[in-house]
Image (cartoon, rainbow, N blue to C red; front, side):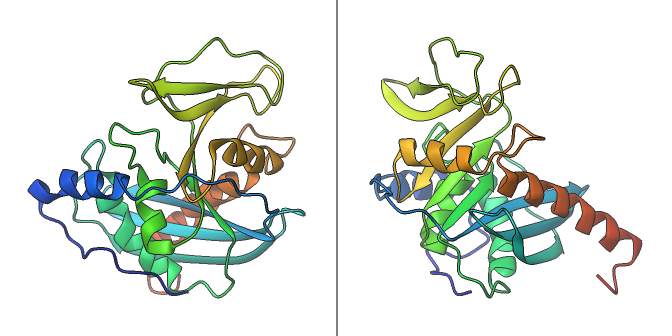
Length: 230
């Protein structure tokens, strides 16, 4: 699968924040009325400096996995809070090139606009992938919200400095919530709807994100056991 080169890697430290600020101005929030046929989930697993970037393609209605691609590589870029995309996108793009089935929507195990500069991995990657993207996070980053109900499907918008940047969503009754945010090219309500359509019966995570998480750790483990054959 081809992607659009927005900037090259690596990026000098002093330029990273200005790139995020510039891309933020280009975010497009628009209703997504479609029911996607194919969705993708993207996640990375790490063992020290070694990382596996995995992309799982899935039939949105049946949750059947239709393609799995990955790229394993040593990561030299250090982790800097708020700058995750600069570390992970090079691996994600190499995995993306191996993908043969074109997705309609891409889910990330991470944040989109739920970010100090509204440029989490799901938002930043969208400009390269040119696809609607959604960020799904398991932990709280920033933003204020009203108390959340306990029933499945309940949600509250999250705000930062007067701007709605995501939602806290109860995907399973009585279970810890997840944090959903727009990556790009759709509306928050659509991101919540599509995320809930991906929720199965055994996890609070949308199935597309859960499978990406499972396979990223599995592939990294197998690679470390036999790096020449995986």
